Length: 267
Image 1 (cartoon, rainbow, N blue to C red):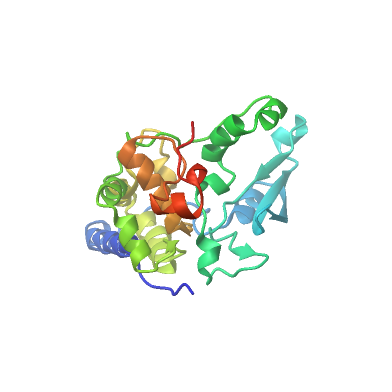
Image 2: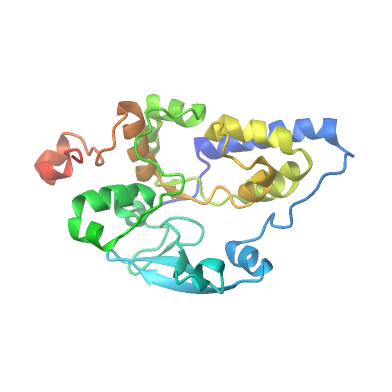
């Protein structure tokens, strides 16, 4: 069974929250624009813009139940496109399984190889040529493949120090579950009145990027973190350390238990 316990990363985010709280003293009393999307989920954000949205439950081949959203009456739909927003397993909105609950270790036994996202699209198209032939155009938004160039110090440090192994030894299977303290205090309050300070603090966690819309930081943080598996983060950590885009490395023991194909890299 998986028991809820504070992770190192959650504790670090709590530290960031305290850092922001101290900084609020300096900006207290200054009027700030508060984005109306702070605290809203995707359905509320879409509907606030006058579009219709449907919520669907989709069961994957390995029995995870994902929440997906179909956007209606959008500009893209009017142009002939079918517009969907998907969620990854393990997030706030996709924590269901036909057999397991999110308290079961088996629920968290996945990495990005098992999920549908931009990273997996690259791998999926290389493995399944028939699938590749059916897709005329694939536009990846903020894709992740090779991560050796990562600038986020906290994640790079976690990868280099093999912190993922400590998580696994301690039996921690979930990485950064939904945290109301962070979402409501930091995203819903601190970031709305100290956006510059908030942006600086978040950069410590995820790194800096000229493509980040800093005016929407409060909106992003009000829904962050959303959760994933420790195994998934361990997979990213492996790729960060080796600067590769490879399958999950189960180590030498798996050669006896699962076969060499489960240990080898993606070519």
